[in-house]
Length: 189
Image 1 (cartoon, rainbow, N blue to C red):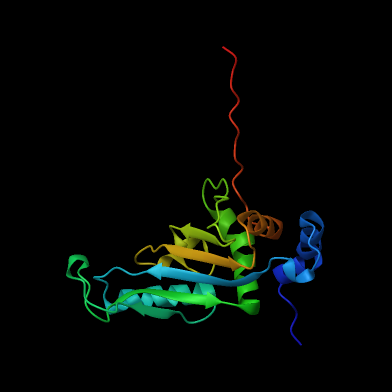
Image 2: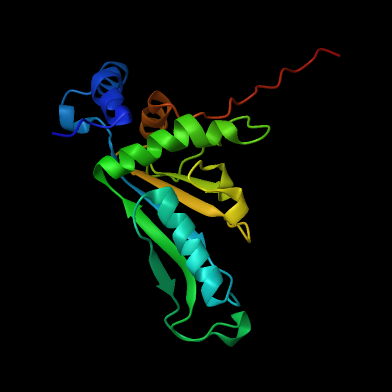
């Protein structure tokens, strides 16, 4: 019998009751939860097969499962794209894999960013959070010696929250290091 991931256990034991108390939910099904986490990385249009394989391997190491290649549907000459050309790869995480990835992201990867002051507290208007990472080598699964070209990574955390405030509170209680907004005081002149 496997044990529950640490962050999922934290959600059940601490975050869930805290949200019930803070937000005053009357029904347990009103409490927001995380549905899935999507990881996406774009690949240069002129990339060769080795570079595509490297990006796919690295994203697979980060996510813990094999990514799917994204291909173009039709040719667009202005962007130098051919039909059925690889332009990215993506992974969708659910269940225990999602909780394990979120734990590694919040506890290990984000704090290792140089001069880190927190992530933006802005959500998408529907309670979901998008995070862009410019250098994927912050993840401990990636060895810098094997990296030939740095790639960016888009992370989308999809929640059942109805509003941005509910989603932000859920993520804050899970440990998302949001940037503090500073209020400017007017000086008397």
